[in-house]
Amino acid sequence: MAKKKGLMHEFTKGLVKENPVLRLVLGTCPTLAVSTSVESAIGMGLAATIVLLCSNIVISALKKVIPSKVRIPAYIVIIASFVTIVQMLVKAYLPAVDKQLGIYLPLIVVNCIILGRAEAFACKNSVLASACDGLGMGIGFTAALLLMGTIREVLGAGSFAGIAIPGFTSPMLFFILPPGGFFVFGILIALANKISDKKGLARADLKGCEACPMSGSCAMQKKEEEKAAAQAVEETKTEGKEENK
Image (cartoon, rainbow, N blue to C red):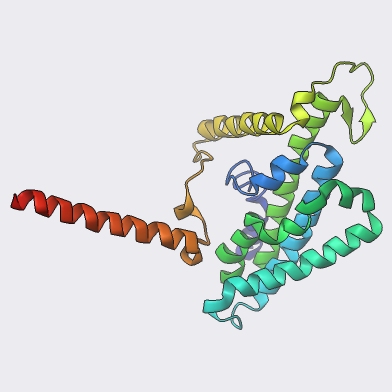
């Protein structure tokens, strides 16, 4: 019973409590770029979910085999393999969706949600738990994209999934432009924070590199740390010279 409860928790946490877009503020680039319509939002969400589920399973199964020093390159190779398969299937059977997603479909390889779950969860937990985590996070990502896509398409184009809404004669083009994407995203984050405040949960916030699950292996983060350390040494030397004077 405890095991079932644990697996159910790993699945449901990504839907609302730890939604990757509205709670963890991850994957914002594809979220803003492809949420101009319901069709593209669903296409991106399903593609990312398939890659996330498959990569989590494989990474969890190989966690004892992959050396720690090359784990990030190994993760990227695994993720890229599944992205290639998904991209080929979409090109073959859903060319319209492939055209809508464009470059953002192959860029799933570097989606921070997928790399983040691989580093933060899949490499530390069982295959079944990792599958539940990947599926839940993927569905949560898809739901957030669908919500944004619905709002932007209805208000910006006067249609839903490409079907014109009767009586909607004055669509607001602003909502399907980049500024409209940021506006809708900000409103949804604000609503998510409002609900979180009522439930006593932590607010969604951009916490910087230290909150990233891959910060330990990030070259940019190491450069920032080295810069901060050098600055601290320089300030100490300056203080020492002033005291000697």
